[in-house]
Length: 111
Ligand SMILES: [Zn+2]
Image (tube, rainbow, N blue to C red; front, side, top):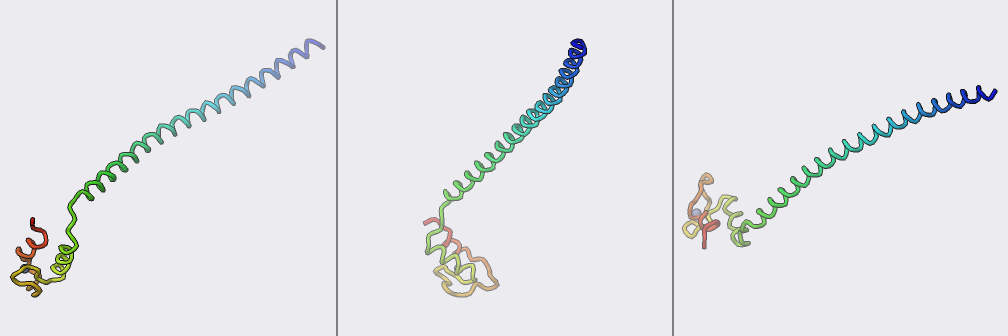
């Protein structure tokens, strides 16, 4: 009777060990997946940081560019609408939207 109990106990123990091994493998898979995911997120994070940094730099560069003054912006608008803003032909229509070097100098030239 006692001998049979021992066999039963061994069988139970074996069944439990099989269960534990399968549980162990399951957890091992989860750890592997988590590590892989972590590595992917690290790469993605790095990539996003680079995108953010380059966009930040771009906007810094853009804001560093000199802006046209308000009055020059108005002249630029007039010019784009097809009028001369230079001293020679001020207010006259630019024929066929021809570019005028004098106008461009007034709008964009150094002063
Ligand atoms: Zn002009």
